[in-house]
Length: 176
Ligand code: S3P
Image 1 (cartoon, rainbow, N blue to C red):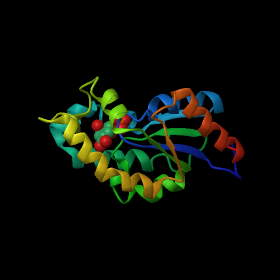
Image 2: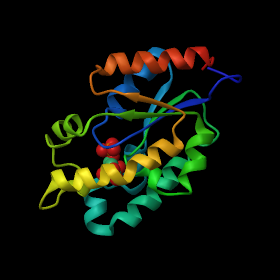
Image 3: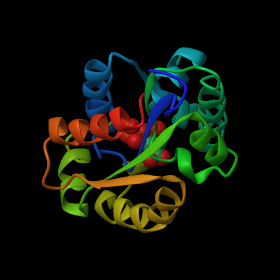
Protein backbone atom coordinates (compact mmCIF):
# COMPACT_ATOMS: atom_id res chain seq x y z
CA UNK A 1 0.00 0.00 0.00
CA UNK A 2 2.19 2.82 -1.09
CA UNK A 3 3.37 5.73 -3.13
CA UNK A 4 2.73 5.32 -6.87
CA UNK A 5 -0.98 4.46 -6.59
CA UNK A 6 -3.75 5.80 -4.44
CA UNK A 7 -3.18 6.21 -0.73
CA UNK A 8 -6.73 5.27 0.23
CA UNK A 9 -10.08 4.11 -1.11
CA UNK A 10 -13.01 6.47 -0.51
CA UNK A 11 -16.57 5.21 -0.97
CA UNK A 12 -19.33 7.69 -1.69
CA UNK A 13 -22.99 7.10 -2.48
CA UNK A 14 -26.51 7.38 -1.16
CA UNK A 15 -27.64 5.94 2.16
CA UNK A 16 -28.08 2.20 1.76
CA UNK A 17 -25.69 1.90 -1.17
CA UNK A 18 -23.51 -0.56 0.77
CA UNK A 19 -20.53 1.70 1.57
CA UNK A 20 -19.88 0.26 5.03
CA UNK A 21 -20.37 -3.41 4.16
CA UNK A 22 -18.33 -3.14 0.98
CA UNK A 23 -15.70 -1.01 2.71
CA UNK A 24 -15.14 -3.61 5.42
CA UNK A 25 -14.65 -6.31 2.80
CA UNK A 26 -12.17 -4.20 0.84
CA UNK A 27 -10.19 -3.40 3.99
CA UNK A 28 -9.98 -7.08 4.87
CA UNK A 29 -8.81 -8.07 1.39
CA UNK A 30 -6.28 -5.26 0.94
CA UNK A 31 -5.19 -5.36 4.57
CA UNK A 32 -6.13 -1.74 5.03
CA UNK A 33 -8.00 -0.07 7.90
CA UNK A 34 -11.72 0.53 7.63
CA UNK A 35 -12.93 3.98 8.67
CA UNK A 36 -16.49 5.31 8.65
CA UNK A 37 -17.02 9.08 8.80
CA UNK A 38 -20.33 8.62 10.66
CA UNK A 39 -18.46 6.64 13.31
CA UNK A 40 -15.82 9.38 13.56
CA UNK A 41 -18.55 11.96 14.12
CA UNK A 42 -20.06 9.82 16.89
CA UNK A 43 -16.63 9.46 18.51
CA UNK A 44 -15.86 13.16 18.16
CA UNK A 45 -19.14 14.33 19.65
CA UNK A 46 -19.94 11.49 22.02
CA UNK A 47 -23.45 11.37 20.54
CA UNK A 48 -25.30 9.12 18.11
CA UNK A 49 -26.24 10.52 14.67
CA UNK A 50 -30.04 10.77 15.24
CA UNK A 51 -29.38 12.53 18.52
CA UNK A 52 -27.07 15.05 16.83
CA UNK A 53 -29.65 15.83 14.14
CA UNK A 54 -32.42 16.18 16.73
CA UNK A 55 -30.47 18.31 19.20
CA UNK A 56 -28.19 20.37 16.94
CA UNK A 57 -29.57 20.13 13.42
CA UNK A 58 -28.10 19.12 10.11
CA UNK A 59 -25.63 22.00 9.71
CA UNK A 60 -23.93 21.12 12.99
CA UNK A 61 -23.69 17.52 11.80
CA UNK A 62 -22.18 18.68 8.48
CA UNK A 63 -19.50 20.70 10.24
CA UNK A 64 -18.56 17.72 12.40
CA UNK A 65 -18.57 15.50 9.32
CA UNK A 66 -16.21 17.86 7.46
CA UNK A 67 -13.94 17.94 10.50
CA UNK A 68 -13.90 14.13 10.63
CA UNK A 69 -13.03 13.97 6.94
CA UNK A 70 -10.20 16.49 7.26
CA UNK A 71 -8.74 14.50 10.14
CA UNK A 72 -7.95 11.71 7.66
CA UNK A 73 -5.72 13.82 5.41
CA UNK A 74 -2.15 12.54 5.49
CA UNK A 75 -3.13 8.98 6.38
CA UNK A 76 -2.76 6.03 4.05
CA UNK A 77 -3.98 2.45 3.77
CA UNK A 78 -7.53 3.45 4.67
CA UNK A 79 -10.83 2.32 3.24
CA UNK A 80 -13.18 5.19 4.02
CA UNK A 81 -16.98 4.82 4.01
CA UNK A 82 -18.56 8.28 3.97
CA UNK A 83 -22.01 9.52 4.94
CA UNK A 84 -24.37 9.90 1.99
CA UNK A 85 -24.49 13.70 2.23
CA UNK A 86 -20.77 14.40 2.53
CA UNK A 87 -20.51 15.30 -1.16
CA UNK A 88 -23.02 18.15 -0.82
CA UNK A 89 -20.59 20.34 1.12
CA UNK A 90 -18.32 22.04 -1.42
CA UNK A 91 -15.26 22.18 0.85
CA UNK A 92 -15.34 18.38 1.22
CA UNK A 93 -14.90 17.70 -2.48
CA UNK A 94 -11.17 18.49 -2.79
CA UNK A 95 -10.52 16.64 0.47
CA UNK A 96 -12.27 13.50 -0.79
CA UNK A 97 -10.28 13.61 -4.03
CA UNK A 98 -7.02 14.26 -2.24
CA UNK A 99 -7.53 11.26 0.04
CA UNK A 100 -7.56 8.67 -2.72
CA UNK A 101 -9.59 6.79 -5.29
CA UNK A 102 -13.18 8.00 -4.93
CA UNK A 103 -15.69 5.31 -5.89
CA UNK A 104 -19.41 5.98 -6.24
CA UNK A 105 -21.60 3.03 -5.29
CA UNK A 106 -24.86 3.41 -7.18
CA UNK A 107 -28.02 1.35 -6.85
CA UNK A 108 -31.55 1.56 -8.21
CA UNK A 109 -34.11 3.56 -6.26
CA UNK A 110 -35.98 0.33 -5.47
CA UNK A 111 -32.94 -1.41 -4.01
CA UNK A 112 -32.01 1.62 -1.95
CA UNK A 113 -35.55 1.92 -0.64
CA UNK A 114 -35.61 -1.75 0.21
CA UNK A 115 -32.47 -1.26 2.33
CA UNK A 116 -33.16 2.08 4.00
CA UNK A 117 -36.76 1.31 4.90
CA UNK A 118 -35.63 -1.56 7.12
CA UNK A 119 -34.37 0.77 9.85
CA UNK A 120 -35.27 4.13 11.33
CA UNK A 121 -31.73 5.22 11.96
CA UNK A 122 -31.56 7.81 9.14
CA UNK A 123 -32.84 11.15 10.45
CA UNK A 124 -33.26 12.68 7.00
CA UNK A 125 -35.81 10.02 6.09
CA UNK A 126 -38.02 10.42 9.17
CA UNK A 127 -40.65 12.39 7.26
CA UNK A 128 -44.33 11.93 6.45
CA UNK A 129 -43.46 10.39 3.12
CA UNK A 130 -39.97 8.93 3.36
CA UNK A 131 -40.17 7.25 -0.04
CA UNK A 132 -40.76 10.60 -1.72
CA UNK A 133 -38.10 12.32 0.45
CA UNK A 134 -35.63 9.68 -0.61
CA UNK A 135 -36.50 10.08 -4.28
CA UNK A 136 -36.08 13.86 -4.15
CA UNK A 137 -32.75 13.58 -2.31
CA UNK A 138 -31.48 11.01 -4.80
CA UNK A 139 -32.28 13.29 -7.73
CA UNK A 140 -30.52 16.21 -6.02
CA UNK A 141 -27.48 14.24 -4.96
CA UNK A 142 -26.60 12.28 -8.08
CA UNK A 143 -24.77 15.15 -9.73
CA UNK A 144 -22.60 15.59 -6.62
CA UNK A 145 -21.56 11.94 -6.60
CA UNK A 146 -20.88 12.12 -10.31
CA UNK A 147 -18.77 15.24 -9.85
CA UNK A 148 -16.45 13.77 -7.25
CA UNK A 149 -16.11 10.10 -8.22
CA UNK A 150 -13.39 8.72 -10.47
CA UNK A 151 -15.01 5.32 -10.64
CA UNK A 152 -18.67 4.35 -10.44
CA UNK A 153 -20.24 0.96 -9.94
CA UNK A 154 -23.89 0.10 -10.39
CA UNK A 155 -24.34 -2.33 -7.51
CA UNK A 156 -28.03 -3.04 -8.12
CA UNK A 157 -27.51 -6.61 -9.27
CA UNK A 158 -24.22 -7.28 -7.48
CA UNK A 159 -23.36 -8.80 -4.13
CA UNK A 160 -21.23 -6.78 -1.70
CA UNK A 161 -18.40 -9.27 -2.30
CA UNK A 162 -18.53 -8.69 -6.04
CA UNK A 163 -18.48 -4.93 -5.60
CA UNK A 164 -15.54 -5.18 -3.20
CA UNK A 165 -13.64 -7.40 -5.60
CA UNK A 166 -14.11 -4.94 -8.45
CA UNK A 167 -12.65 -2.14 -6.34
CA UNK A 168 -9.81 -4.30 -5.04
CA UNK A 169 -8.92 -5.09 -8.66
CA UNK A 170 -8.73 -1.40 -9.49
CA UNK A 171 -6.62 -0.71 -6.43
CA UNK A 172 -4.21 -3.55 -7.15
CA UNK A 173 -3.66 -2.14 -10.60
CA UNK A 174 -2.93 1.20 -8.96
CA UNK A 175 -0.54 -0.45 -6.46
CA UNK A 176 -2.52 0.41 -3.32
C1 S3P B 1 -26.78 11.05 5.63
C2 S3P B 1 -26.36 9.74 5.55
C3 S3P B 1 -25.98 8.95 6.73
C4 S3P B 1 -25.50 9.88 7.86
C5 S3P B 1 -26.54 10.93 8.14
C6 S3P B 1 -26.83 11.80 6.92
C7 S3P B 1 -27.15 11.76 4.38
O1 S3P B 1 -24.93 8.04 6.40
O2 S3P B 1 -24.29 10.48 7.51
O3 S3P B 1 -27.71 10.29 8.58
O4 S3P B 1 -27.23 13.00 4.39
O5 S3P B 1 -27.35 11.09 3.35
P1 S3P B 1 -25.13 6.73 5.47
O6 S3P B 1 -24.99 7.17 4.05
O7 S3P B 1 -24.03 5.84 5.89
O8 S3P B 1 -26.49 6.18 5.77
